[in-house]
Structures are given as C-alpha cells and as structure tokens.
Image (cartoon, rainbow, N blue to C red):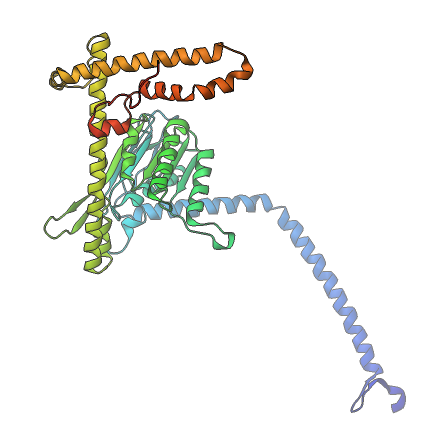
Length: 450
C-alpha cells in the first residue's frame, strides 16, 4: 500500500519531507560502498608511502646534487655574463699571505645598464697592514670599495670565481660588516644606538681570522664624540683584535692613528676640483695617504640645493676650517717651544741632548743658537727654582707622614694645605697655557714658603 511505502522524515509548517523503503535501501548500500572505497584508498596510500620511503636516501641525495648543480650553474652564468672575466681565487693556509686582490671590482655595479667602465682597485691587507683607514669625498666610492671586498671574500669562500684580475686570501671564519644603519621605532632603538650595538658585537666577536668592514661609524652623534668612538674602536681592532679591517670614515683626523698603532695604513679615493668652476670630478681611484676634505658642499650642489645656500655653506665651512688651522698652528708652536726648552735644560743639566732620528742637523744647530744668551740663562734659573721647590715639597710631605700621631694627620694636612699648594705650583713644569702664551715659563706666581 502507499501508506506502507512512504515514511515521514520531517514535517514543517510549509513542507513535508518523506522517504521510501527503496530509497533507504539505496542509501545504506551507497554508505557501505563509500566506506569500502575509503578503506581501500587508505590502504593503497600507505603501501605507496612505504615503497617511496625505501627510496628516500636516493631522493635526498638527488635533491642535494640538483641544488649543487643549480648553484654552480648560477656561478658559471654570473662569471660568463660579466663584462670582464672572473678568476679562480687562490686559498692560502694560515694568514701569511694576507688578502691580496688585484683589480677588484663590484660584481653588481659593473653589470648595471649604462655603466661604461668600472674603476677597479687593488686590496692588500696582511698582519703588517691589517687596518686600512679610508677617507675621501662623499660619493667618491669608499662604501663601494669596502663592500666589493666583502663580497669578493664571500664569493671566494662559497666556491665561486671572483671579479678580480687575481685573488689570494686566507680562510676567514667571520666576515663582519657594519654598513648602513636605521632606527627601530617600535623597539625604541635610535640610529646611533643601532650603530653602537653592532659595533659592540664586532668588538666581542672579532679575532685574527675575521674580516671586519666598517662604514662611517660615529656619524649619528656629535663630531667630537663620534670621532672619539671611531678612534677607540679602530684602535681596538688594530691593537687588540688584530683582525684584517677596512674602516671608511669622514673623520680625517683618523689618519693620525697610524702614528700611534702599528699595522694601520691610510688610503683615500681621489677626486679633482676645477678651480674656476668649482666643479667636482670623482676619479674613484684608490691611493695611499689621507685627505682633509669631504667635498660635502660640492655634493650638495649636485643635489640641487639653491646656489645661495651652497655659497653660504661654503663660506661657513671655510671660516671653521680657518679657525681649526689656527688652533693647530698654535698647538704646534707650543710643542716646538716646549721641545726647545726641554733640550736647553738637558744641555744645562747633563750636556747636549742626543740627536733624534730623522732630525736635520741644521735645525739642531739653529736651535742651539737660539738658546744662547738671556733666554738660556732664564731657562736655567727657572729649572733650578723648580728643583729647589720640588725638594722643599718632598721634605714637607715627609714631615707630615712621619711626625706626630696618626689621629692628627688630617689636622696637620689642613694646616699645611696652603704651603703644599704653593710648593706644588712652584715645582710644576710649564703648562700648556704658558707654552701657548709665548713659550716661556713665568715661574711661580706666589712666594715659596721656606
């Protein structure tokens, strides 16, 4: 009957859902078939995975070989596509040979469209010349030079040919770079703090097997503090870490580091200025020595600053340079005067001062002539006065320590404070102020107590 054939499933307000006995049977049959299919599919997948797993070592080795071929093919393509041929680097054991690159080039800049020719430069760093201070104008190529050296070393140590005429290098355990910096506002890290954090990491990790590349360290703070930090960090790298380093900077006074620390050399990138038009031409050629100009005003003109602003900047820069030169001349004059008096006192107390290496004999003779007469007699008398005052100061201090009880020491020192000060001033050698005032020691300004 129709009533026994149809079975109600759900009754809503506007519809009646029902099924039949035949449809229910078909649904049960479909469910059984679907479960059997899923079980068979899972069984086949498990068998396929078991078979594939047995080939995993071979597949892993194949992937490694394909990756190696990909990398080597990329190295070969880069070397063949270069406008000038790459060469095979020579790896030397130890650090006896140092880092020697002939006609080194930047692998990316030399293939840029519109680049007619890239100026190649040599690199020579070893234990005798382990730190190179690089100065030069803005946009002169300092950063490009130090980066191409780091890239060349990296390419050589990963198995690539390098963009050089010849390349010899030891194996570096670290290539540490501090190039460029930016702030991290979300963490409250300023640009200068980021520089110092990176510099601290360099000083902690650098060793004799490291190559360190530093670009314009200390520019994020005041001139004097930045120079002091750059000087101290460069000195640490050269004197303590003794790693091979390239240090690009606009602090031209860094060139004097070679006089204080052995193993430091000075290099600069060259530029030419037309005296008539004040136009600056970059030569990009690395030369020995240190420069004293960065040509920042000329680069500002290239950038399109108004001519009045550029001229005003040039005038202000010239004024500051004139003041600095005057200060240097006064300091040098003071040092020369101090050396003359020292040699005069040495001659009076124990004969003529010894001839220093590299000092012209004519200059020595002239200085001896200048020391004669009243100036020589005055210097001798001042030296004797200082000796007498120093002897009195020694006896006074000895009496304070030896006489009386220990509990009265503070009282005795308080009572003798003025006497000690007078003797100290009388026994002190000429100060730098006295030297700058005229190169003569005026002697004590207060009477010396007996």
